[in-house]
Amino acid sequence: MRSMPAPYRLADRVSLRELNTFKVDACAACLARVPQAESLPDLLALERFAAAPLLVLGQGSNVLFADDFPGLVITLELTGIEVLVDDEHGTLLRVGAGVGWDELVTWTLERGYAGLENLALIPGLTGAAPIQNIGAYGVEIREFIAAVTAWDRTAQLFVTLTNAECAFDYRDSRFKRESGRWIITSLDLRLPRQRELELHYAGLRQELAALGVGTPRAIDVASAVRRLRRRKLPDPARIGNAGSFFKNPVVSRSVAEALRAGHAGLPWHPTPSTAEVKLSAAWIIEACGLKGYRVGDAAVSTQHALVLVNHGRATGRELLAVAQQVIDTVAERFGIQLEPEPCIIRSGT
Image (cartoon, rainbow, N blue to C red; front, side, top):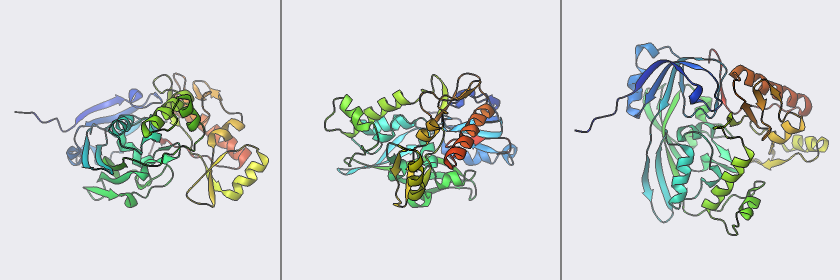
């Protein structure tokens, strides 16, 4: 008789150093590893967690621990990719929240589906993708999400939300705005077999040319994106970081034109609104002379100005202090308020 997996595994006073890509020393009061979504209601109903803070943690690639976490940390081991629909036009997939994001990208491209190629090599798990509405090289995941299934802690039931109900925005979603309410367990993704490739971002066409690709396919674009990311961004396996730490600021076109008048060469990118443009936070930070800025082991990367790095033993608070220095300097020189991308865990959150 086939044995069923344990509903969850609990451990107290667990180090989170290997569960966050910044490699910051932090401790969870309790850690629960959950291999099946159906176990969540029973776990959360335990009396010991009735008033405890809750954090769902994937690979920790979008979080900065400024303090220990005083409550329950949940890691979802929900793997599996299920094909719901497959025809000549494309596919509808159901993907477990615990599937590695780049593993999913590779899986789809190898089977001839397009759409996720520009999102290759983004760290993290699939369940985190809709929270941040992850994006890169002109593509966002919201374009392909058909539905998201999650445990609704308010209603105490599993809910499937449509794309519209997710309320996606730039690096934002309903799940992020209502961070204590939802635990995402799976995504339904609709991917085409053919689509117009997004190649307008700087360096992408040049990278394809360097690869000797004349007429690119989706899988070629993914190869180019991976090469670009490996060259431009520090590898979390070698130096602690969470990728881009700051959002690219979105401002009115008139503000952007005024800034460019005083700062020649300031790049911007279009947004869905013709009245607004997205500025390059990396360019702005570098223009402030902060690329490579370092205090102890906490620093702005010398490789990419959007990335904060831990050179060894930086604490979360030390990294946060470097981030604040960047925010203050940019505000003083450019009049723009940069916003962090990662979730910052402080006492009381």
